[in-house]
Image (cartoon, rainbow, N blue to C red; front, side):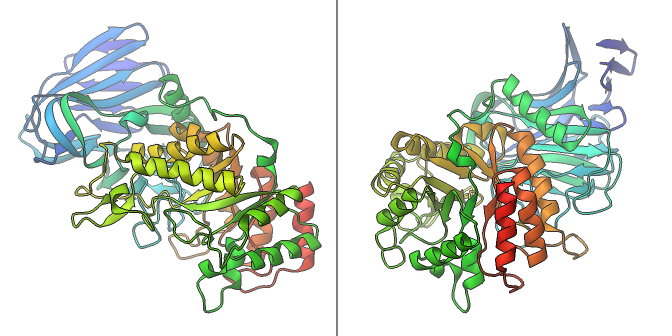
Length: 569
């Protein structure tokens, strides 16, 4: 790497990028992409962190390493320094503070300040790109957005307005910027691209969300710690790592390799891959929705209906290797006892499926406090149970007992874990332990994964968490529910969404199997196109047996014979 020094700036040419660090103001030009603001704010529950003086950058050179430290005087901490660490291929930005406080929001690439020029308020990074790739499915569907559009990478969400962005929870924490705007909702322009990813392992993933917040040509990143991470002494934020890429998929792959290289994510799955995991799946949720007429689909998770659907599929040559019993086979979501009215003699039913060469997975609603005592839950200010608390030893013991009951006594074969996005968000919430954010979700899934494997080593654990650090708490990544419309209100083909999600998941977790999912489908034509594409993109999952729920169109015997042919092929 070559450095040239002038009175006004340091000029770094790495061969892969050019960076100019101002000696006067807190900024650095990443040529062609961004003017990086070297202001950051580490806000606490005690108040705002505002920089009131920036000092000249301090340069330290090493072998294939250049570090720029920008010290700042601040209202919130004893010391604060924004650091740029440059290698031949990457630029990493982080903030370091010393003092005491409970973290609220942390902003990088911008923050609150009164500069030496007396300019004051919130400062942001200038973004010279035109498009930004969002790795998490969101509604409306827009894979590459104008850089003026916000993005949330989060473990919090549902289907209500402004919250349908946690279909992957968590997604890879990586954005990618390009010089062009896309033509359609799933189109990805050609390169070049600039990846911007979060370098942090599980121990530092105690925030709930990374928000890309653009405004008037600028943007910053906001990490929300929600008042659950205490600092005593020195603390360093996760780093934002910039690296050139040829595509968004390569940017996500760089994110993974960076985490693995720094010991912050596993190389891949930790256990043996069993052959039956790759067999096609039938999940009954779509059939439940299609049959529902004046009743909730959850009332139709019944033994007699599943037998009827499976018999119809087999009549036309569709024989899944795995059957998922979906919502709601259990009496309560929290304690997971089978409902004897809907699923009488469930152990015998599972045994009969085993005798036919099939495996059975049970649907699990993550976080649900339904049926749990409040002392095993995260609680609100009124003492009400909000979510199961995996930091609580009593709940972890309950999970082990549930696994012994379901995988041992009932002899089920694993779980489809859903609703990881229903994280118990809130600064006032109380948990048994101090872990929060993505790290608390990892603790939940890790507890489930280890408990399941102790009872049945080949149990299959399916999640929708394609973040590389979650590689050792999941065997298969499901692509989750299909969305509907683009920003103009036009339908987005389901199969295009399948391909986008597959690219994200396989780039982030290349060693994992992919559950291609299949719900909801807008029409029979969409369903057929989706079903034909599935076998080439992962484990095919069939959700329908009789009709399509959204359109009411019947599924014919010929349709099912096509599915059987695609599965064989």
